[in-house]
Length: 467
Image (cartoon, rainbow, N blue to C red; front, side, top):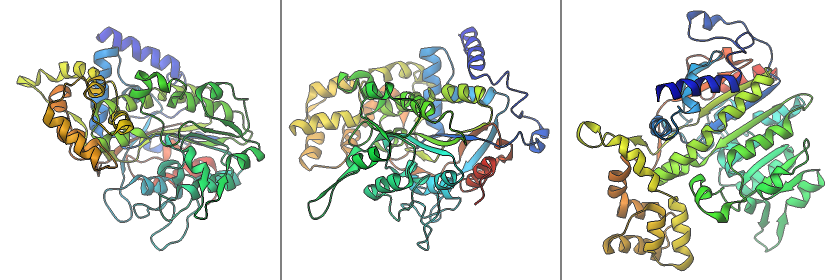
């Protein structure tokens, strides 16, 4: 296995081109790194982030990957590359040490901390100008990609200003007004809005009138004309979980995050003045809230597959700054010690593979009939439920709870913990400091410890944007 890992690292270096780009990118790991000379202005920025990534989720996915693929995570391999600038990021919001995604994205997007629930609106009620608006004014193209609704908090934090994150209809309207060049994700329901008087606003024709290509499937996405504006809406709400897309043929024409990221780069590459692109692996956060071990593992693995795409791009475009990070932790996910001398933790990484669907997929299946279905439960989790467990879930269905994950964890949480050795601290966000990796022009300005709102100034300075 050690030979396979070494071979994988060499392959990753070759694909990313970072080993050969040492003369272009600054080195790290020595005291001289703090005085590295600027390597020039960034024409492009790729901001690659995963929502709600706990340090423990990285450990879970890393050891699963080593065990089943005989190779480290791309996330872990970033640590071995020359040109890396690494920081530990304080993620607090203006009114709490534990941020939500809206405040976290706003800190990146506007350079100021705001209250949880706000998007680029400060505590006094003043609207703040987001980074994609500055980029537009400087002639750069702009793009947002997410596995969540495209109107969700994280993409909105780079591009819009609303007092409450739930104002997703208004966010869709601002995307149209501000002419974000590439928009790929879910959230189609916010582009066809029913008003209080019963009238309907359909924004799709208005995007088309501005020259946007409109796509709704993976097949259509793969056939888009290169260059120009693009709007891809692939689900009414969030993109289905990766684990469900892998195991349910009904989702075969829904693109994954790698597909969307690659398509966005294809559209934005070659723009004369460059571009700023934010890409979010958003559903790690949702699986953390649900304490869904299978969901969180496969969501992060899908995000991790985006990293080589980004590195390959900056190899051929050394005037691109790349940031890879997360906004906060969610759920306190950990692979725990199990069994005598913890010797059952490894086999638990095999047993987690019997999880074939997310809690969300189960909820949708149960809600279709209003009844708990033991066959569906067995298909998703590989568990034969008892009558008591079935009754817990049925009671939640009868009560029409918004999220069934609470009942599923009440009924099956202990069993799932014994199966997977995955533990949780809560179903909420966490205050942990998080990793930030950066490469390329401007990355030399990143200090070892950074507050989330300080990143905005580093990005705009790297791009030569005056604010």
